[in-house]
Length: 266
Image 1: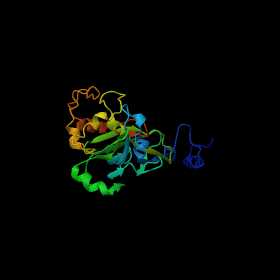
Image 2 (image 1 turned 90 degrees about the horizontal axis):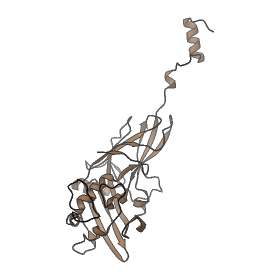
Image 3 (image 1 turned 120 degrees about the horizontal axis):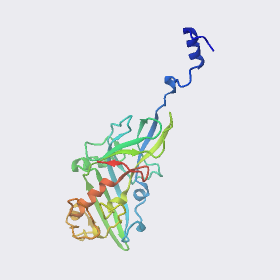
Image 4 (image 1 turned 180 degrees about the vertical axis):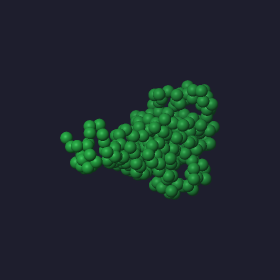
């Protein structure tokens, strides 16, 4: 063993002859990064098929626009605000949001879907003026089809939802990168229950909202539909009695992480 002199100690350090249980700063775990993307899955990019509905409808989308900001890991926050139209075909890769630093190992993300100032990024620049003027966080338009009947719809919502402690599916390797998808579940817009863990997906009551028979369903027509006596539309303890407010409440359940992963919401 080397004598414990200052010269010997320095030599031992240089040769890596350190005592068991000791470590240098270089041995500390290195951070990695997360490639954060937003994705609407096939239910937005391809539409919601008939077999997803309890009443035989199907949905094709023209636009599915979400306003996104507050994207963060515990180690870094992205300062951007984005408008994404999730109908854009991505081949399963989603739309790039940001690359953020994350401690290695199990990781979490946070994000917000809500109204705000004009977006500076995303893929829906043509929607910025309208979304800001209306105070909307979500805008959807498309067509619902059952047999020969086609009903168009165009709805905007002003809900604000903060998603926190979203557990990234893949662990972050030291000094390396993983991809994580903020996942938006479009079928939740058509859920028929605000409390049940396994609600049905329905459109039939929404179809009856077309009061002027112009084959287009608007926000105001949804507001005119009373759901208080409909056995399929359950609100629990919430003070909701019309179809627009019901669907807007469901918009606060759209966000997930990496497919079916859940987040805490506020």
